[in-house]
Amino acid sequence: MTDSVKYVLDERDLPRYWYNIAADLPAPAPPVLHPGTHQPVGPDDLAPIFPMAVIEQEVSLEREIEIPEPVRDIYRQWRPSPLYRARRLEKMLDTPARIYYKYEGVSPAGSHKPNTAIAQAFYNKQEGVKRITTETGAGQWGSALALAGSFFGLEIEVFMVKVSFEQKPYRRSFMETFGARCIASPSELTSAGRAVLAEHPDSTGSLGIAISEAVERSVERDDTKYALGSVLNHVMLHQTVIGLEALKQFDMANDYPDMVIAPTGGGSNFAGITFPFLGEQLRGGRGIDLVAVEPSACPTLTRGRYAYDFGDTAHLTPLVKMHTLGSTYVPPGFHAGGLRYHGMAPLVSHVTNLGLVRPRSYNQLQCFEAGVQFAKAEGVIPAPEANHGVRAAIDEAIRCKEEGVSRAILFNLCGHGNFDMQAYRDYFDGKLMDLAYDDGEIAMALAGLPSVA
Image 1 (cartoon, rainbow, N blue to C red):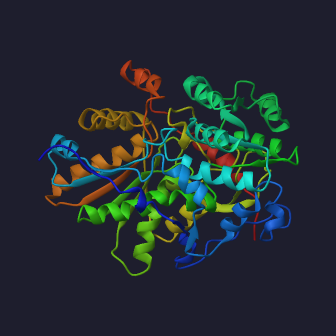
Image 2: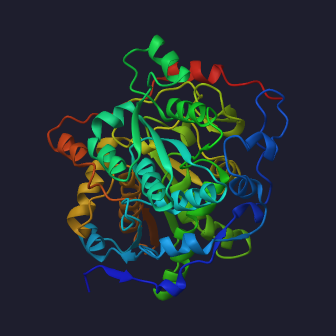
């Protein structure tokens, strides 16, 4: 049999709880610190930015946190998402590997991001919030929050990294269709944006800059909160619906992954697919190889320093311990805009530092090559971010062939590339280049890390 096999759960199998890996860690993650006192932050420190329900999830040590029924009702529009056995890709590669992918492109926004956007919008609405500000890289998160805002009647303001704002105009149109306001970052709308433009008038922007602008706007009005699409613990939590479903689907397949792979920018995609499997391992279950894949031009896990740093460029956020390239580092404008972040989720950084995760990096040309190969075999064009996971999965399948072993490989196809066809056009026209990070710029950014005893 060479056709791909689809494993579909009934909506009755939709998870009722999110999984919190903090309950099973062999050592607790380092605390979030106040940037002035360097003491652990409390709920009152975060209350101006986030609703209290989200803050409680951020610091929770409970293994299971109930998913509110209004959130599950919206999830049912596309969840549970399908798991595929990529038999046509296996045949193309002539590999004994068993390749599976969890497909999150079936969501209304075309990616995994609504899993947390719906939850965050719900909690903000419950607390009486009228407006949410946020940032977005390639646009997947901004699209998801715009969608969520329309469901709950919230005003959404999105600062989109300028290079992606210019590369991906249809993402802006998507957000505006759902009533959101989309602004190229850095902008003249905030003091943080104006400061960047004064020093670098042609700045292509970064997620760190866009976060600064969104946070600044959120504290200007009492009826406004800020929402983050990755990095923080509560976002990792919401995304675990992916891996929880995948566990049940592997039971259907009468199989279990030897390796789980995911693209990794801020960490939510990786955490969503891997943390439920890692939790099984930490509770005495089967060992599993977890691979976090990032762009070589923004090598946070592979080349960054594990240290306390700010999550944004203007230093408006608390200090978190993470793998970082320095909060002032601006990555080059490669097409996987969702992976252009200077830091990594503290929980993902922590489990990597514990030796539970293997990071690796790829250049964008080899990732696009893999994306095209996957599309021809499986009929889905991956987003540029997702191509990093595809590349690693193909490489591992080829390695299985070379070693003559059959392993089950699972990767998260976190979104489709239907809004990213200009990137593919540039690839086919030979306009894409492999962009290298600047050692000197990273060294300068790391030299500015806050001194934390």
